[in-house]
Length: 281
Length: 225
Image 1 (tube, each protein chain N blue to C red):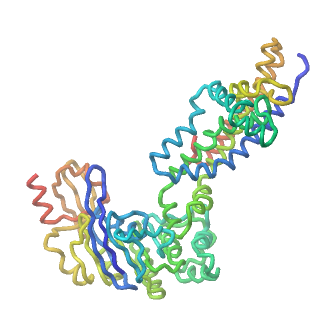
Image 2: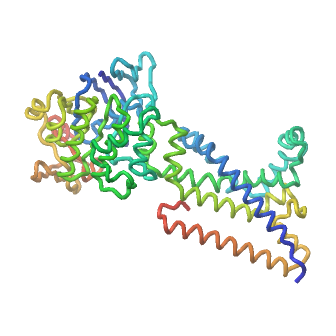
Image 3: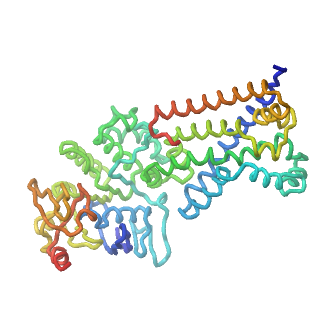
């Protein structure tokens, strides 16, 4: 599978040029890591066709989904994809079974619903409405709904971000079990190095729309890019002072105009390069 | 108190029912074409549909009269194809009411759809579903309360219509003399006792409708008006 994407992305007043080129083997789990606003979700949305690249190519199993040169742009509906949204996006008007039934192509046998309910171990929830389920349960249903179409490409957009550790482990096991079964090429956006190490065979580190590093999780995660000083999640912002949670400890750093650029809960990556630029400001 | 004519209420009820059902049917494709358009086109279409909210009913009535009269474009077509006269007839009132009440049906549904997370639409697309399929099976069922509110408001608004009806329908008994027109007639003839009864019934009706709408909204906090 080959993905070449170029797009100028607008976030508020600033624009960023996303420019990535990924070549991945079919049937692998590929992780995309990087700070918020680096373009991770945009990459997934361009693979699905929900967002159109300015230029590029998306080729899956010798089938062209997008090619700016030959003006090919397959509709989202025509691409064989499963997408798991960060906030699940289950349809509230349908029960778990109805969500799966709606997703099931008409040619597929109805028994596929029970098969997937069993695989993800959610048979007991089948008649419940999504509103009655916990976050973890909803995410399992969302995974089942994405898989029931047997897509060629599965896209997981920070699927476990809102879950506690034990539920995260369970879901990671679900992803591995389903991957073992269907061998679907999977893109996983994640902030969690342990998760990436556990699930992925390739990892791309994205920063400002460019790929900073790529390789196996062991090689990339044990040898961080020389520019990277630290990555962490923002706990508090007070004027220019940002409190970051970095590996269970707190760091306080100065970032000019921090309060207008970042929000509590954002994950950011601080690189030596970036630090120098900010000091020159 | 003189004898009370009940046919104006029956006419109002018939007109409101036909208008509400017709608008349910017309609104769905209309909402489809507005909702899935780009934002700029959507703005223009929404402004056109909302015109009856701000136009004086007499202005709308005047333009409708020009269109529906036998020399008018629509009036001529109706005469040729269905051999029906539209001005000063019940059929004309239905056409006028549909146009006049259009924003009351379309706007609540449209604003509820716009408040739904984009993810629902996008998720349906990734499951291979067309826009129509997404609208009918995913989006509209999740804004049920706005469908209810749109229907009730359309019905109530049609019952209370006056200016447009007077312009295109006049006051023909059993044909175009609806309840609001009947009140006007009774006052003109200084039959205040009758006018009182007609007005009190309409007041009570409008009040009950609003109570019903707000009761429904209290149960479902995502209400739209």
